[in-house]
Picture 1 (tube, rainbow, N blue to C red):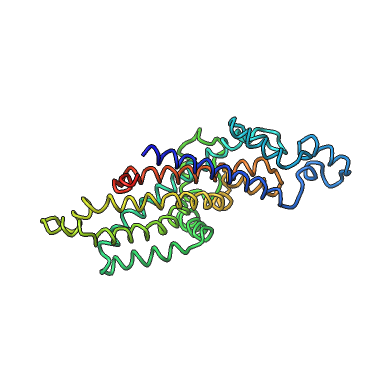
Picture 2 (cartoon, rainbow, N blue to C red):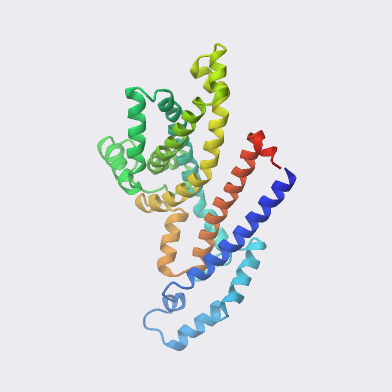
Amino acid sequence: MIRFLATRLVLLLVGLLIASALIFFTLRVLPGDVAQVIAGTQSTPEQVAAIREQLGLDVPLPVQYLDWVGGILRGDLGSSLITRTPVAEELAEKAAVTVPLALLSLVIALLIAVPFGVLAALRRNTASGTAFAVTAQALAAVPVVWAGMMLVIVFAVWLGWLPPQGFPRSGWDDPAAAIRSLILPALTIGVVEGAVLLRFVRSATLEAIGQDYVRTAAATGLTRRRALITHGLPNVALSVVSVLALQVAGLLVGAVIVEQLFTLPGVGRMLVSDVGNRDLEKVQGAVFLFTAIVLVIGALVDVLARVLDPRQRETT
C-alpha cells in the first residue's frame, strides 16, 4: 500500500507539472495583448512597450513559466495583470460561490443517481424500470443551458418560488438568500450530471445482481433486494466512486456555463471575463486550480478504491 501511495503521489505531481506547462504556454498562443488592453486604443507603441516591461511580459516565456511555477510552490498564484490584486485572493472570493454550487450540485446528482439507479436495475423488466432508464438517457443528452432555462421558466417565472438570477450582495451574510439563489443553478447541473451517473449506477447494479455471491446469498433465504443491499452495493459503490472523478470535471465545466446563465459571481464567470480581458495571470491561476482539483480528486478516488476493494490491495 505504501508503494502504491508513493507511486500515485509521483504521478500526481508529474500530472500537475505537465498541466501547468500546457496551461501556461497554450494561453500564450492566444491572440491579443494585455498591455494593449491596459494602455487603450489611443496608446503609442512606446507606451505599450513600457507597460509590457512594467508587467514583466518582455521576459522570455521559459523564465516567466519558471517564475510562475516557483510562485505556486510558495502558495502564490501571482497578481492580476489589470487590477494588480493577488490571484489567490480573488479566487478565494469567487470560490465562496463556486464551491458551494459544485457541492450542492454533487449532492443533488447523487440523490438522483444512487436510489433511482438501483431501483431501475431492480425493476429492469418492468414499465417503471424502463421509464427510469429512458428518462435518464434523455436527461443526460439535455444541454445544461436549455435545462437551466426550463427550470427558470417553471420555478422562477411560473411558480415564483426561486430567484431567476443573481446572488445577494451581502453574500453569505444572508445564508437563506444565498442558498435560495444557488438552488436553481445547482438543480441545473445536478439533474444533468445525475442522469449521467444514474446510468453507471444502473449498469453496476445489474452486474452485481448477476454475480455468484449475490445469487448464493439469495439462495440462503435472503430476498433478492436484501442480498443486493447486503452483498452487492459495496461493489456498486466501487464503480460509483471510480466515476465520481469524471463527474467532478463535469460539475466544474457545468459551473462555468451555469454561472454565466444565472449571473453568479463565481470562478467560472470571472474566468470568462478574464479571457476576454487577456488577464493571463488570473486565467492560468483559475484553470490550474480547476485542473489541480480534478487531478487530486482522481488520486483520492484511486486510493479510496484501493481501500474499499481488498482484491486491489492484494496486487500490491
